Image 1 (tube, helix red, strand yellow):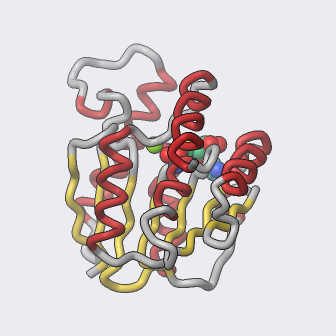
Image 2 (image 1 turned 30 degrees about the vertical axis):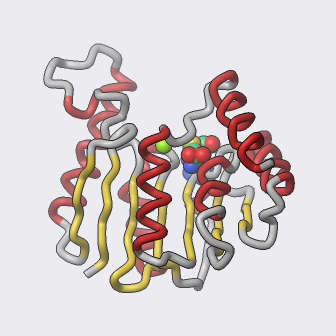
Length: 194
Ligand code: SAH
Ligand code: MG
């Protein structure tokens, strides 16, 4: 049942150009959650609920709070979560991440939203992470552009890539976190809080 829903979501994402996690990236995330016995997850960027559903399916003990500002995607996420019968495990908020406030503590924060704001997201929520917990960031390769040496022609793209490079530097220099970068999906960073 859920298998079919997941495949339908993958097709829907493809047709509607919704950037859900790539297969090896989502598998990595599922394994990380299993191995580290993660129970409370904050996800920034729900889209249609694909990654939230896959993470929730790892174990019934997992609770996820996830945020999406786009009204249509939010509605779709709500529908999908209901179909997967995961309403008890996944809570979706339809608002901008920068307006979202929480006192809760999480053992994993997954950042997968507007790439230009990763430093702000990281700083806003790092106090909501338990020590020993991790912030996982998706799309650090930005479709390969982050590592491209040649000058990027489009100004918008150049600025975006600059912001991601800046975020990678920020992670490398951050003394409160130990970050490793892995070449899976579109490039993932795992920053463990020391
Ligand atoms: N994690 C999802 C994919 C998320 S795509 C998955 O793998 O299934 C990124 C989403 O973040 C988009 O739907 C976009 O609307 C949302 N987003 C980007 N910036 C945001 C912000 N500042 N606040 C809330 N949502 C945001
Ligand atoms: Mg992504």
